[in-house]
Image 1 (tube, protein in one colour):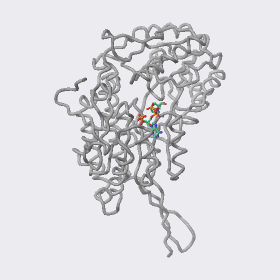
Image 2 (tube, rainbow, N blue to C red):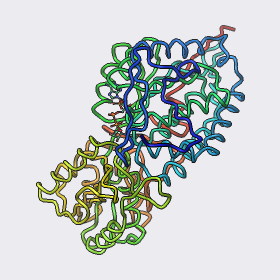
Image 3 (cartoon, rainbow, N blue to C red):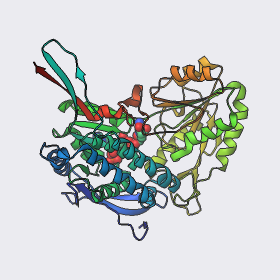
Length: 489
Ligand code: NAP
């Protein structure tokens, strides 16, 4: 079994009503370290009866006389702030847990993802008590105002690529606005969120306000979606599951928000700083092993600078070597699971078969242990936009490079996708930058950078990348509802 640091206790049981408990069925599932293929621990596998217990606890804290509803918004904020401080001071502990469970480099989990989760809590703590209604002029002899009330019990269902951070993107705004949460982590990566629940309890979050129920998507996920005591579903994950979940939520008429996949274009115009663009192209696709919803998985390059840019990109990619995710210098870790690695390798084979030119990687990587689900940074050149590797989300370290003739061609190719999550454009021409940013149908467009996020800036999709926004003031919309009050004078 893979060991964590000797002074760390893993939480492996469901967190319901402030307690860590076994699943009522007694069932567990094994969670594996993808870098070593060893079992880390057995995690309690929840069922519908556990979801029901979590809903009861969460609903109790939505009662007007409950501790959570009676708590001043500023005191809620203080708990969130303490929790953010705790994440920062224990970033190494929770970062290591994330790394052994997910395979991502410790550099990312300890120094990027955990601080980003903390920043999200700090940011939304600031909103607590500041989400206000309006006084509204209506007819004579009346006075009217609106209240922004919590939606109620939030079902937060999240994926395995940023297990802690993406869950916190939902938990933080939900708590700031007085809701309670049932959080279902992905089965591959439940450990960091369970640890977070332990921290939350230590910071004084009342029992029942946050519940964490790991277990199979088709069991726990469905039970959350079906439960009449859950008021809204905040989902991040694949298009397929998002679609199924939305149809299912129609039965109980639940409000649903979906943060789904992407096939994001990273557009390099001929006048760009090619050195910066080549670095950016690598960060765009190989950060997080390419298991990033916003990954710049389509590199669109203007014909006239194609050869120059590609020689820089390939050179950099060949220097990027997969290694032990726990080593502080590692920048390319292990793919999250054997199943996901096989999916990635199948896409690589399909690229080869369809005639794309493989110019880097293209196979598994061995870090010297003969173990682990590592894949070399892979780059295909001369990809036809009709090929599968140009159309489908691979969710791994595989880049598809496509040439374009001019700005109009770039915009057309960038938009030739069902997705619309993110995009970037590299250029020194400010007018072209704004023109492309406006024309690309995506929720986020970076100019001369990639993969930068801030809790104050909304993030979410256009088209099949979903609807609703995490982060920023927009996220508050998901977790509040407006009540109009009319007073007859
Ligand atoms: P997934 O298979 O859709 O799973 C996401 C979550 O849904 C997991 O917790 C999963 O549980 C659960 N689930 C599975 N089937 C379910 C069902 N029938 N009902 C309710 N819940 C169910 O996605 P993934 O493979 O974990 O993550 C990768 C996907 O997430 C990619 O498409 C990526 O682009 C997307 N993503 C989007 C964003 C964004 O902000 N737009 C961010 C990150 C990732 P189990 O793990 O138990 O199956």
